[in-house]
Picture 1 (cartoon, rainbow, N blue to C red):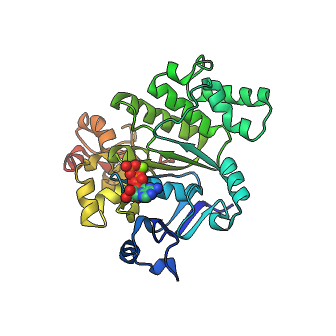
Picture 2 (picture 1 turned 90 degrees about the vertical axis):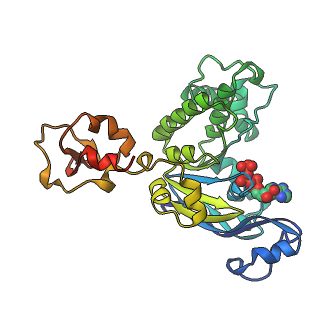
Picture 3 (picture 1 turned 135 degrees about the vertical axis):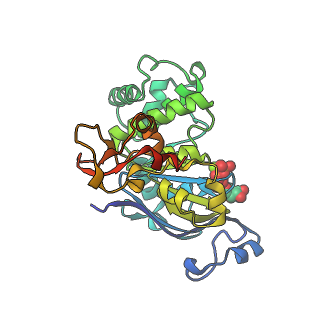
Length: 335
Ligand SMILES: Nc1ncnc2c1ncn2[C@@H]1O[C@H](COP(=O)(O)OP(=O)(O)OP(=O)(O)O)[C@@H](O)[C@H]1O
Ligand SMILES: [Mg+2]
């Protein structure tokens, strides 16, 4: 099984005039020429892989092309140029019927606006995708009840959307997106409509779910903090272009352009830099009786612990081996 679940190769999406792109290789198309023809360039020349099981976050300001790129990735928009290959299937070569079937089977989608059906209960909203594919009523309701419990909504099965809070409605949206066990889970600003406290709670919940489900995720947000919290890798977009793809640590420590540098400048480095990056070698490691800290933890996570210790603290890798030491003076320099 390939470790890549989705490939985007020189993907373009142009609206209006020039929607079919230009002749020749999309890798060599010129956005300015498309604009001169009267086209609106939503996405230009996007090339990347989404790996199986990773959380891939698309981030950028309003209008930068995030939703357009996501819709190209799900087959909802036909691309103007380039290719999207979802779990081995080239979306631009699939027939209309094949595409509909593929989207039902492989794509789970959560929207910012929740997009629930107002006349259906929570349970029936969640079961709806299975109704469309003809799963018998009892079976789909049983499965829907399980997924609702997974997102913490037991007891609310019979509520209508108007009888639930925003956070509860979005949990229904999340449950609905998971009911068909999709190969890729797409979320377009799922928490932006929620107030900050609920938002944080939903992010925690999302991380809990992901540690259980290990889905391949494409998550759109315009909030850098959310991107850093939830992303294994982050894509930074501006004006339809991908400026950088990397881990949160890469993007914040080594911004590829001035735009990215300005974009990430408000994020404290201690939130993303991991202990393994700044540790010293293990030669001055203290007695093994001193509790270790994880090389994979961020500096801000270990700070409280380090502030209580005066000397070097041993750092352990995922297998518990001592791989280095840090002391608080080194960490304080990153704050
Ligand atoms: N159907 C459409 N027809 C014409 N232009 C469009 C269409 N959809 C999007 N665009 C344009 O494409 C660009 C990218 O829009 P998109 O919705 O992808 O941005 P976004 O990054 O998701 O923004 P937001 O954070 O506001 O949701 C914008 O300039 C937008 O006006
Ligand atoms: Mg959008």
